[in-house]
Length: 311
Image (cartoon, rainbow, N blue to C red; front, side, top):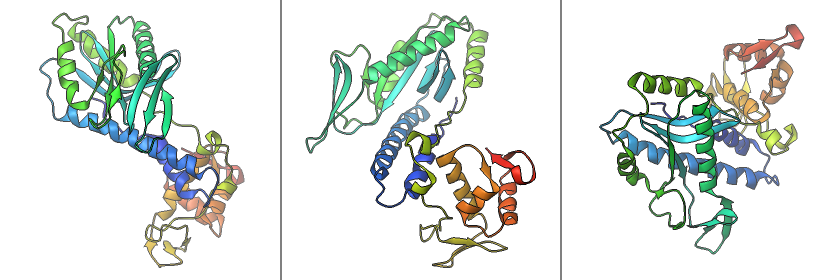
């Protein structure tokens, strides 16, 4: 099994929301996107718990948050594989009453207050991922049938999708659905099945999202610099020879600057210079910045004053 990890975009958006200057015109857009990603991840964890508590009696493999390259990069929320078929499970955690439309393909969400929003059809998303996975398999001379289902994270999510060509299921119904698909006719021999699982695992590459400043057209002036105090929740920490200390509440920390540097990479991406480190962390000299960056074990290019650090 490939376990699920929190998506990096979650860290990126969290850093951006924490550091965006107050009342910025794009603050609400960042917060809305963060809430959507948090909800999506929470929905995926609901499905994960179902698999943790259910044992299948036939050989299978489960891959969570699988990112593969076919004609383009694609990501699968959960992939369930047996020797006779593969099943792509697309998880949705969208509040409100949901209505699926086919022409054009859309998902319409109606909230209790009457607000209506439209989203890309999850059926279209699922069909695209199934096609890309089929292409990925064929490129490896593996002719395994691929099926799929939409998983609604909570039963309170009411959906009207009577004409959908793929099943809409709640997490508790997933084991029965997968058991019904089980076949005694294997397409893959045991060695082939084991090889496929290895190829899927090694074919996965962590997805690194575009830096927030690029995807939202923001600059350094749009974000607060400094090292945040865990107690004050404000960028009020300063560095002395031994540690970081908060200029407001006098809280102390030895590694508070590490999170600030991670925030910088999540927001701006690329490579960090010693000067950029000093400016962002409000450091008084280059030797402090050098010691902090060295402890974080970044990769390095260049030397002396042209040295740059990257993840």
